[in-house]
Length: 585
Image (tube, rainbow, N blue to C red; front, side):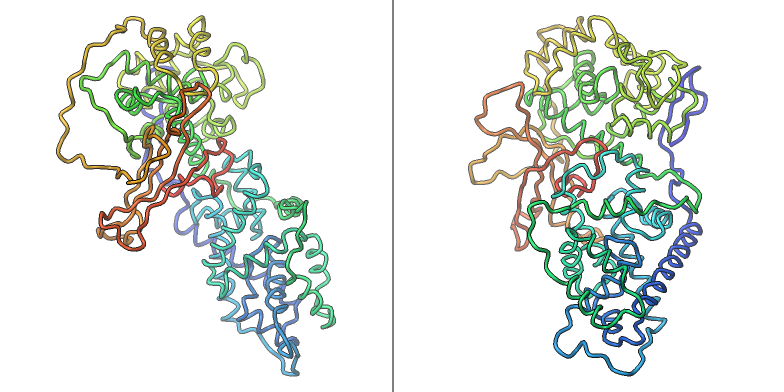
């Protein structure tokens, strides 16, 4: 991002830039070396407690039985000890009997385990937070002294996930299972499924595990270690009140240390806001009537349907879309079922720069990164980030804790300019008009409820926002379709249960060779659909689907299509939820 030079007086307009947001290679190498040193210290403490030199069979479990990894739900030392005992506890018969020969862990093997553990820990964080880069994950692990869950909590705080962990124990359990599996695979664990099963089986009795692990030391009698290994390896008994929050509750007791490396705001914070804005557009698409959306509003939404304004983000998108269509009508009639992925991403990104430029114009003491953080804390709502935008909330405590220096019209003008609106001056004027008086009340009453708008609601909004627009529009000329437009959907022979509302995201480069121009065999699609035969209701919205379809008309083996319902999470609630499949794009 970059502040546009020579902005009009009072305006601070931001635009994208190619400035590097991530640490330099030298910094990454330094952070990685320091993290490896911390991991090495954890291994030294764990080896001292296990005293593997006098326990050869346990040493074998450490080296080659899947033990010895620093991955798990406790602190690094406890994870190493627990993983070793998990593996050791599965030994049967006389394989657990010790011999008199001393066993030393080869240094090259120890270094290999340390590097593989680091790779697994980075994978844990980057799968938990898909927008987090590897270099950022290393930095957060360094903050957390190589403690996985502490690092996850720091990441959640730094990228503004105020609802981190609010999705319920089942979702959290699914997420932990997924990220542990990815971590084990990245670390080249000999049996990733076994590691995941071990920790999930222990998750409801971590208090007991921590208590027993604390008793492990170099002078622990062999019988005690055998008993502890068997306890840790037992299957988790079914319980009605499973404590799925156990790992996070225990993590709270491990307070993060002071930052030992310079603070740098994570680029993932911006991605958190972008993800929330994407959710707003999906909701706005669901609220717009299907007929008008396909025939007219797809154009005005992609050109001028920004999410800033005096209403909530979804209502702002609807208001800006309907007003622009009425004030600047299309010249051709073009009915489309598809809203392209890149087009939707472009308007979402432009909206982000509009939101930031609005806040920075109103409050000159904040910069781009601070504005992003205020918006994330406000769940992407401009009304909550700038309480002076609303007369009823002006004066209340807000993240932007000083009165604005610039008026609304200049701020909306800066937002429209930053968002590349086709007519910034016209948009600034209409948004200013909507910000107060009877128009604000009338528009709010029409948009109230959150349900799908009817054609009559749209006409009322048109007359309210653009009175000069004629109610009876002239017929439009048909659009001259170019030959390169190709079919984008295939109808199934089966009777569909849903009627298409609109397609809102397509990635046609799935399951193809990476880094080549070879054919990709599948596409991922997000679309909104309405249950077939459902009567219109202002309280019912189209639902979001995810589909994987074959790009090969011959439908070769392994390219079967499938489709499933997905849900849009609360803004800034966390993008790790498995149910939110748009992250696959």
